[in-house]
Image 1 (tube, helix red, strand yellow):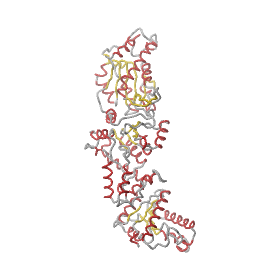
Image 2 (cartoon, one colour; image 1 turned 45 degrees about the vertical axis):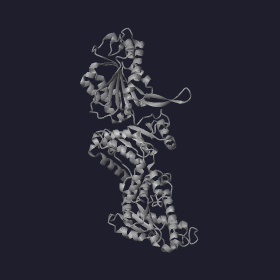
Image 3 (tube, helix red, strand yellow; image 1 turned 120 degrees about the vertical axis):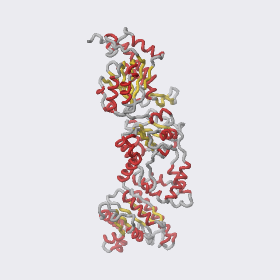
Image 4 (cartoon, helix red, strand yellow; image 1 turned 90 degrees about the vertical axis):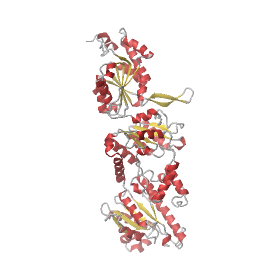
Length: 636
């Protein structure tokens, strides 16, 4: 009869000050024998565990012992058990784990669930009922509940789980995740410029690999006993534990019901069926080919922090994802792109320099995610773009709140791979319209010494607007969003990328009229006046991605370098663009100014025209002070 009992049940209360592990099983199933073997097991550290027989504690705490306990009411028994549990929690020394063997339930002679147990089938029914009730009770109470299958390695398997329970606390889990990150980057962390943090499931593929895994287990004749036919992950996360640390720990224990070899076999079967989003493959391939990635042998260069069985010693929760982000910023000082798709990813996404919400087919989306995204974008606590996969699916919310990106587009991939090393020098990028017909028409009134005041300011305004819509978008990029069409449907519109995270700075006084034109073309951008570089404060750059410095003329480049270097001290990776009517050619050809400007980071110049004329006007056509812009030529 003892041989017919195949399972023992374990539970752990992870939030208790002292860890208490309960070993439950039918009477005569070998609990005491297992406890005796565990006491002497070499894998268990000496004095780390206290082994207790639950009935002895109850007998000790009630006059008359177990006989008296069996005579009290059900409420009285419950009270006595709770008293015993609290007594056990208080009894062990610090850091010692209590392992208690005992019974979960007894059948009375009047119970319709079964009379006195004589047959093996009755024992199995008792065992199944006990397991179901104990599992439900543990989930309601936030207690982890694994099932240990009786095998030739029963004692060793049990010892491994005891060690896991002893160490597997949330703080230890976070530390293990951080150690794994340090192991990945090693001594190369200071060389890192950009890191992509990607939540794998439902982000790189539309397929739910966890559901597929357990579906295959359930359909296998050898493992039908493991699950009841339903998706255990959906049942677990949809229950009282939700997405807590205990729930993810329970998932790891669920995988332990399979041997390591069986687990690997099922993983390989799932992997062979998974199809990645075609749009995500080019991005991962390009990233894996870059020299600044740690390894260069194709996709294996992508490092993984993941949970699985207990031997992984890691549970990936929302808190772990946040800890990874924080450690990247604190110890690596890197630019982080984060990709995610679920509410569990939102805190990770909110910490990223660049956040991309991956949006799948409409029927597979969670309404809770829409609610959280809408709240975050409305209160401006969360800024992200969305990648709709496949591209034929409709966007999430609307593209005003979250603009669209194409993961496979060359511009998007290049924006990720672009160097952010402040000491990295590239050719100064300059976009100018000197030979364009529109530029020649626009510059005419600005070169006319007979035009001043309001008319001249209007001319500068038009130039600023023209440069913004004609050239600035080529530097900053553009993004697509939906607008209401006059015929009642929606249509695609375009605007400057990250327009709402762009700061326009009018260099006073000559740059103000042109800056107003730039602002008209970028209505969502922030506007600021600045006479000196120190007028730009750290608060002005908070949350911004681009700074557009607008001046009427750039002669020596001294002013733009001063502003750029000051801005870099406040924000090391922000993009800087100088917009000017006239830029002296010597700025481009003279290496000192060009290198100083570009060495500060991602910097460009947009100009209506380049000039070889080094003359600096005086009086009524003074292009430095622009007194005729404001009809103040009479002032000294």
